[in-house]
Picture 1 (cartoon, rainbow over the protein chains, first blue to last red):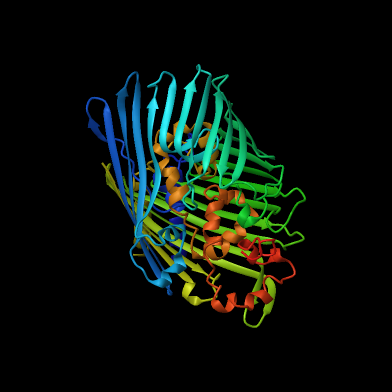
Picture 2: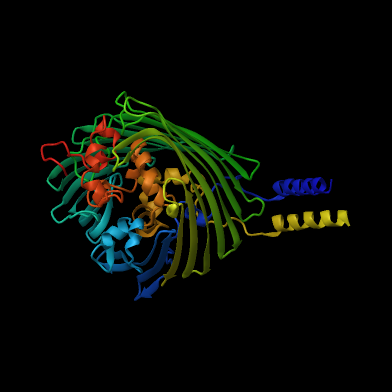
Length: 480
Length: 152
């Protein structure tokens, strides 16, 4: 009886809280907390928006980030240290135009060196082989805007991103013919962190046409000369603003293979509805005779088969604090199903709760089911994912967050006892449970500290030493 | 006494629930909603300048897509998840990875179970002589085993 009364009182107070809190998914307030991205990828950079003034017009900023990562289980552990240096200088006048520069480098190394740490080898550790310090030079570029009238020139290591995103050491030049039409061309050495790129080159050019304020049409041609491959890549893309949203379509051609992607995103603020639609089509098989610039992982996964994919999702806000989402993705391998080209249906549903039980709370719960159909080379395979995440703003300078996820795979397996020449086949069901928590503290506009812990409990390993895996990360940001 | 206790608990709950006045403070635009994680890639292609206003020089893009692996890329993911999911929908992998990344491990690093006992004989009677080579894990790295160049 006593417990029942307490339960009723708590329920009443919760209902009171629901209807007395002031806002959430009403009035177009859909956005997630600033630290929401931590639920996907731990850590984060802090950007300097103030900088240091140099002379009358130039402003320089520099951002230093030190990141420590510890990974451990009963068998082994691995400690890595990363130092990031990012910065820019803006507002340098040259002629009628401006010059600005930016750079982003990462230096990293192992803090311990035991052989067993090879269990944790990833692309970072492989890059460290035979080196004490592994350096990644993400970009370092100078931009000349309007120094030559109507011309934008970017020189150095850069991400060219007109339609396709490419990383090159070279030049990207754009020329604005008039308000509606501009053309561009780029050329440079391909950048790749996992391969020798000394003789790899990429060249390209295209146009951007804006016939109306709400319409953008772009086209580009890329020639990739990489490791004896010679790929011709072309794209045409149209983006159109429509009432309540945007729609787009992008046609691609890789040598003789054609692809199409189209979609639309719509938002109806008055009734709190979001609607997203996407279509992808690959109409010709893409084999492994293309360069890594555009090669869709065909070396590891064999030819990229034909398929059509449709994804539809909708989100609906209600009672000011709640948003429910649901969606489905259907992939049809065009009758060419095999081990690496599969028909599947993926469903998901989610519930987001904002501003409950306190105004500084954001909660998200989700379920995703992935059903891969059987074909002549494989039985059906499945994944179920259930999870939840919470972000709580404690003060204006401190966020804490936590989350958990359960992943369950069902698939066919083939296993071998190499000594006794035993072949075993069957169906396996494995699950992985993940728990994480962390905090982000920003005492000033120039300093932030993020601490993050991730714990995984898994039954995909036969050895119990690997059953529990722990990762701890700390990110210290200083923005000058 | 019982009523007092109930009132105290309820009051405490209401105070905690309502007196924390900090809103979910965010400087993000409203487009950065619950579905944004799935939509931001295409949105960035519409007008990248809008993104760069806050995410200067793509530093945040680089962090998630090139530098720091997502939370689910754990040892279990390396062991099981990535193989299954990449063959279900490799498009998702291609958001961050290209062919050279796969080759980094699949052509240069031997799996842990390639012990000397395995390499010196056991494997010949098992995986490659399975009824269908594609059903085996060998083909992930050893595409050309039965090709004109022989084993690789």
